[in-house]
Amino acid sequence: MPKIIQDEVGSFHNFLSEGCKLCKLGAKMVLFITGICGRECFYCPLSEDRKKDVIYANERRVTSDADVISEVRQMDALGTGITGGEPLLKAGRVLHYIHLLKSEFGRNHHIHLYTAIAPDKETLTALADAKLDEIRFHPPMELWDSLENTPFAESIKTAIKLGMSAGVEIPAMKGAEGILPLLNNVGGFLNLNELEFSDTNADAMYLNGFELVDDISNAVANSRACAEKLAAHSSKMHFCSSRYKDAVQLKNRLLRIANITARAFDGITDEGTIVIGIIESGDYDTITGMLREMEVPEDMFEITNNRIEIAWWILEDIAQELGGTGSTLSIIERYPFENGLVVESMPI
Image (cartoon, rainbow, N blue to C red; front, side, top):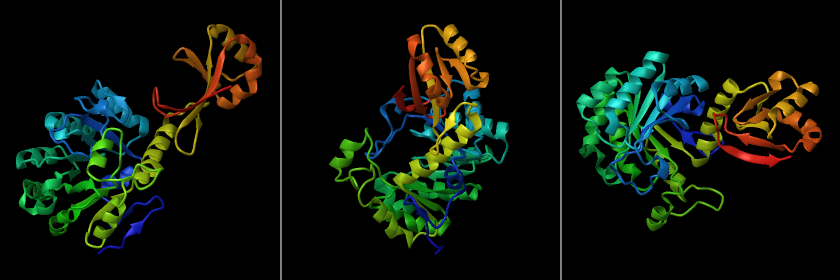
């Protein structure tokens, strides 16, 4: 077996698919095809607002092809991960976006797809013809111990024959060992994700006997231990820890976006968030006039969204001068997207 490689945030692997390598770099856009799904996995972490037929490119609601193209360019993505819900319930939509992305960004734009169904040869051939690079199957739990005798076995074998990289991606939990004989035999990979509690699955998780690993993590107790037991028996395996998703994948994606999109006055943190000063006022002409009188460079502030956004360090320096204008002053930290989530807001 290949050597197990550990990282500093609890993940380990003896094999990384190309899709995982790009995720690690923060270089994959997440294309959420639909929230519709025919399965009812008790551990599903999907939020309620996503459990409908909507499309998102990262955190952006998609209303046109231009939205998808723009999101790829915004982060200079080297690939795309297609997920859901169940993407193949909207197979035509999946194929459309694969063709769109390959046409716009070239053959080397790596695309992987998650699916919880076992597609037939016709569907897999269409995906291969569209140049899908990688497919990750998520079979239901009741099939894990006998996967070799299910339609998933034929789908995995067919995908590999058609030239796609193929494997199984499931939570690290009891029963996962039943998948190994098939994957080791056909050369498929196994991705195990540390099982986590979320707002939408917590009740079901407790009902099924799962507990938190500690008081400061959403990870499930013994999920990592399950993956460790399987590591010695899998020729191609990757365990993705709960911390890895935030500390590595998300952080690197945010940094990638921030470094491409940041304005001259946006402060970029080590976590990839943006820090800016905010001036809210009823008289922006007066405020901008004051900024120019104080010789604040034009590229250090901008009027947008009915407020003035300005370099936070400049706002700190001039806060006293603006104190008599009736303006509301604050410094915020937010994600580097348009209307990105505000992580922290500090009034001045």
